[in-house]
Length: 474
Image (tube, one colour):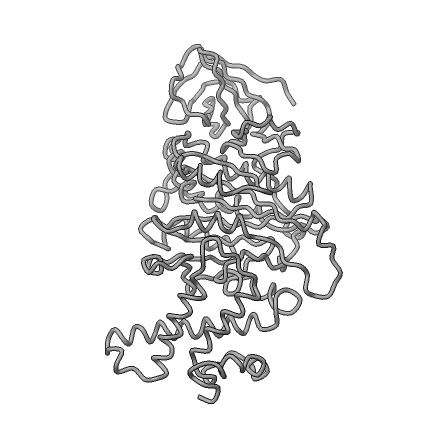
């Protein structure tokens, strides 16, 4: 590493940015910078723009109180790094990775928070089922180890509670394929890396109190400088890569709220004069989000893995907004929360029809969950979609004019929402419990409507219809 270069004169201060006029030969893009003001206080930053003799620096702690003179600026000759060691598990850190739990500083060697690109040919295909304890996810939109599956929410919906519940309950299921496996192997335990971006103080306290155990928490508060929001997910993912690919652990990364991250990116991009694109976001929003989301996955020959559950709120409930829209192109599906279900008091208010897990087909069934998982999921989706059609008809013609089978679908939909989708905020269901509830909900419909299920599967569960008010021969 080269010796730090020190300068004492600023040219301009604007928002979270400062500009300097100097010789560029020894300075690189993304290089870490340390600033010491006239009171002797230290702030950190990085080089974000090099134009002629002008260098623009983002200051992570903000520029309030800085002056153009009597400043010492040190270019450190390295990128922004995060110190990591095995004691990080169970720690609570700031959005920049500094301990805020009263514990000692992390003593490990520094790692570039931008990570390193995983060669696509070195990636292992995600196939192992991760159980969250939430029926609407486990049975209908399965999370797979190494997958990136975002949750699309909106203001006022309980995505924070859902994030806490998943962090507390998520675990890797035992191998059901018949292969032997040591369930005490520490490499099979799931570690949660939780990153809260721009949260209010009361929400941060709630996260700190309710998320514990094998968890690493990064908390960026709403009154923290905007620049820190851009570092928080990168610091969290750097910690996840260390735990996964150096310590061989399976890591679940929960990032909330990525819309706040996008707003911070837009603010900083505007301050440094980047050309705006859709709704004022910079044109590189897609590649910036991809650089974060693509840090999930598994690497051939390594035991660990990184699974991502980014959470983002859709402004004005608009799923076509640039952030959810671009996120959908990068990730492997989405979980969508419903304001209508939330108004009905249903938790978690997961709207199943627009939700999707693209990797589900290869991670459930024999050897992973149970043989009837996929056909039951397909039948439940088909029946729930039919219920929506019937409900729309009933609003036009009235429920009294519906056929008996249409009324059965309305009854099915009510039971499905109240008993399958709805569950307690602390209720941790196994996949077997979710499957059993799914089958019980189908008993509201005649057997002849079970077009997605084989005769063999129906024969195995015929007792459900025998105890139902509909009857097996209807």
